Every structure is written in C-alpha cells, then in structure tokens.
Image (cartoon, rainbow, N blue to C red):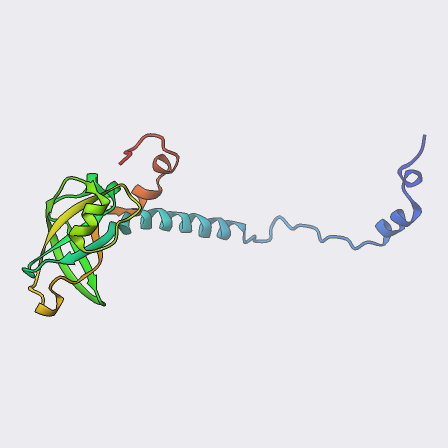
Length: 178
C-alpha cells in the first residue's frame, strides 16, 4: 500500500510543506456578514417601496398641426394608441421649440395613413392606418403659428413602476394585459 506522498510528485509535496498557513477562524470575533445582509435587505425594501411610489408616464407620439382657428389642433397618432385614447387627456405639440399645450376633445375612427397625412400636413407613415384626434388648445396661439405643424405627444396614462415591472406583467402570467 502506498502513501499519499508516494503518489504525488516530490515538488508538489515540497510546495505543500512550505506553503503559508491560513489563519484560524475565531468564532468569537465579530463578522461583517450580518451588516452586509442587513444592507442588502434594506436596499431591496427601498427598491420595492420606490416601485410602488414612482410613477411613469405612458404616451403616444405623432405629428400634429394647429388649425386655422388657432384654438384647436389635429394630431395623427400610431394605430396602436387608439384603444388608450380618451377625451380629456393632455396633449403637447412642439412647434419650432415652443410647446403648445391642450386637451383631447375628439377621437376619430382610424383612417388610412395617406389621408391622415393630408389632414395634419405631414408625410404618410409606414403604418397602414393612423388614429386622428382633435385637441383644444389651452391658450390662444399667435397668428404666426396658424397652420404650423410639429411633433405631438399625448399622455395616455401615468402608471406605477410596479405595474410595468411586476413579475406577472414581465412573464405574462396573470394580471392585466392592457
């Protein structure tokens, strides 16, 4: 029967004999592991709390144009936004760096993109159809902005961050499927 020393190469046995010894663990000495665990638990709790408190805007972006009456604007939006559109939702139209604010008043049936582009004075999008909405402008705009167009943004909803990242939503199990 052979010993372990005979099975290993002599240089390996010599390196093992000369290697440094690891310090012995003192069970009475304080460890930092509990503090690390508490810090991790507090971080997770803070993130979960923040996900219920933080609100995220959900919006649809399209093109819009101020009508000649200077009190309303017409906006073409992507067709996927149609189910979420409601009268009273806030609208912002960026015309040359100036934000024109308003409120949705009328939601039209989806129409062909070419016809929608004619209404808002823009180019047809790649979508086959577009959602057309009319919005009332909060404050009357200057005559120089009559007929001007720009990028429009309609705020569809303001949801809690948890509603967007919850496991049921992420993995598509249970919960709402809006």
